[in-house]
Image (cartoon, rainbow, N blue to C red):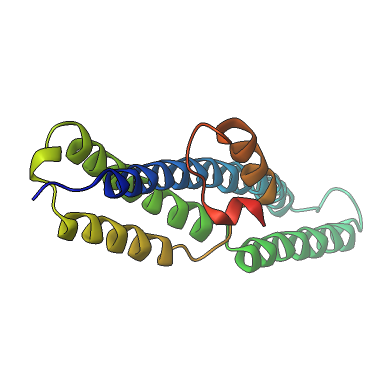
Length: 170
């Protein structure tokens, strides 16, 4: 039994939602990966500076060893602070989570497109239910929310062109 036009529209809407979610995940992964790279710059600089300071023995400077100790303390504190912030904001975890879900959503989008364009005659209601369940299961794997500026940008680009997720309107 062929599926109805309403069911085809439902399938098309989930294709669009999976596509939009894939874009949101891709842009979010890029954003958090960029932030992680930016945060690594001060870590590299402070580590390099500590290496240089620690390699100086201070024997010919007459008493600047205390200054070296203070500089080392400040750089160690700075490094600890940055590492704590990275750990607190979980930048690598966010980038990884968004990246993994993006790949899976993209795959789901392709499966739905394949069913709509190549294999529509053999599409059954169970297939549609499975696509919906797969979509919901993938969305539940998102551990973090999308940044608002990314949601707004995607909504602006795709509003009226694709069926958007409800999350873009809140």
